[in-house]
Length: 280
Image (cartoon, rainbow, N blue to C red):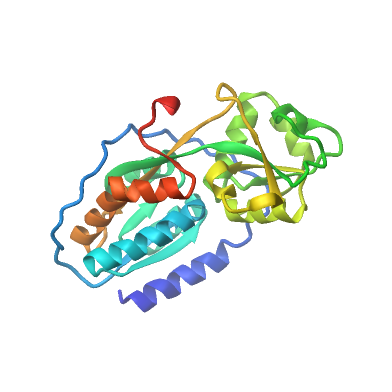
């Protein structure tokens, strides 16, 4: 299928999946085992002229930069589709087109592997959930328990669409406060980037957001860290799609993202890269 047709299908799917402010849905999937750091071959593989990469919205800043560097080094343009991790998985299942999948947590790539969509993977960095509040912390939020206080307005990610939504749900369940926080939840957002906007605008008193997604928000937000024993730190994977028509390029891109050079770009944008003893 020609790329214009692929992008047209993706656009249609994106419109169909845009109704993401509905109730949060329970989804349980396993987490994959770690994979070693990649090295990148200096040679340019054979294949067609560009890559289609499905990437979680929370990785947009480092992935945009990585795409530019990869094209400069290897002459291969990289086209991105950014959305929530589960939304992307649904698009992949529908179109069965594209080259690389990079969700916000390993549970999604495990599901993709079970469906026969991913045949090679690497681990890149960590997603660390934090509580984000508007500048000045008007609701005086200091911990997860404060999200249950009467009158507190909470916005969470939609677990049907975004990795941060599913992880936030599991964090609240782990700490026995899900029902109380649900009672204070005024909306569910389709992507972590939408959560950042809610918080910066002061629409919500608190959200659970990936820490790296708040880099660059300046004085618009404050961060409350979640103690590690209460938290769920997730690994960010990347993998090649089995139906890629650019197998060599796709693997080279995955290895480049997981290489020291790729990880340095993630660190530049506030991510802790894999592996790190603190989170193992």
